[in-house]
Length: 430
Image (tube, rainbow, N blue to C red; front, side):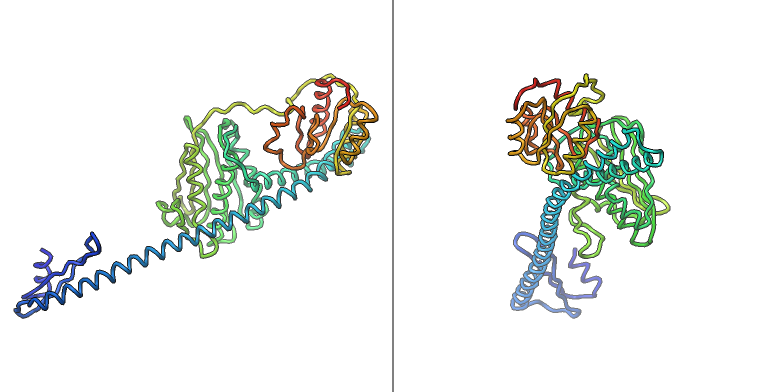
């Protein structure tokens, strides 16, 4: 049929077809013909078969070259992603150290500001300034915690999470850049959104990636724009939407494919959205994208509502403990923390001795008895104070510590922890 069609179109009187093979598959056909009647001799046929074989080899090598080139390109992008992961791991270690150093002075700042607010000896203007100082220190603490939470390596886990809180913490990471880029963020978060079981760190990675993509899309064609973030509950699902005022997606069917990217070389690896897709799918949910009018893309995440066990505070909220003065040994290597925490404990009618090292603490323990010890995490006695995130093995030391406090902490939480510790232990040397 192919031969007859070729003869009809080209007006050929004689024609010969050579099938182009490559291993066990057909690549195509080579049609050779003459507009004058003639017979193809055996020599002609052998020549045509030899030419067809060479053409088949050339096509096969060309296809193999293209596949090899694509494989090397994918490998290069994977290597870039691995290098990026290594850099992020290094950044995580750096941020952990910075967080530790920042949380100690923040503990002192928050402690003194709370003491000023509760002293009753400040004029109205001083109370106002102290309150502003306290709020800004709290804001700094939240920024440090958000960075620490995102940069640290976490094993996948399922805990009770509030999606609205994760979204707010994620956008707080980009708050400065968003304002600098003149991108306005509009929130429409359902106030009654139920908690669900999920991995907060993985979800934060998904949300941050979608925010970054929205920012890049908006700044492609404009020097300002809008980002709408919304949440709602629907049947047995929780819905999160990110909508931007950018140009929209070019190929909605491919945006979640690995290595697919429309960004220029060096700016994107094409792995971000595919990783988001994997995380959301692992949570039993779905993620989709569509273009909206008049312009922009809308990413919709649907997560199944999974009832999660209520989180219990390490220090029971609102716990009523009969206050009594205690003999407290306070241990911390940072003198500013020692002074601030000592002042808070003395304000709570406790007698306090301080030590900046474990040998000094041992000496004090040999001189007198203490009702409780408040110490930095390295000591692991009674009440922990930690400037870094709580260690994963904290639960293994439950017998050594009654309560754990994350620096910086509220004065009320410290006093509550100490008073509850006094209710658990008998006055005796440790």
